[in-house]
Image (cartoon, rainbow, N blue to C red; front, side, top):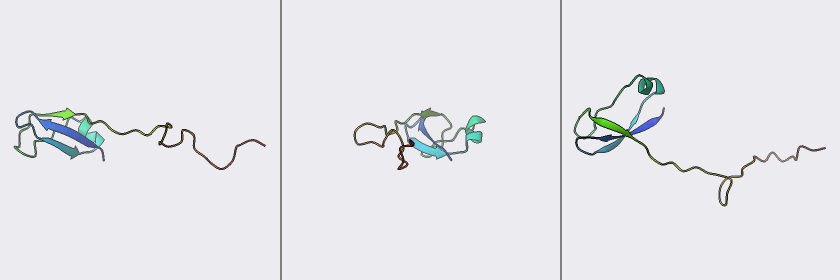
Length: 69
């Protein structure tokens, strides 16, 4: 189940809510966990992404065979 980040517009509290995609798509909005306000806004959090660069995962999966011959 996806987690969505919110920030209360009244008290400034930041919190995470897990809800189904169907509930989120239907417009279900959580209340602030600290003050109970329904005046909350969704925030976005940066995520780490591994690439094929230095120190990251390989760009092409290795299956132990070159596929030739």
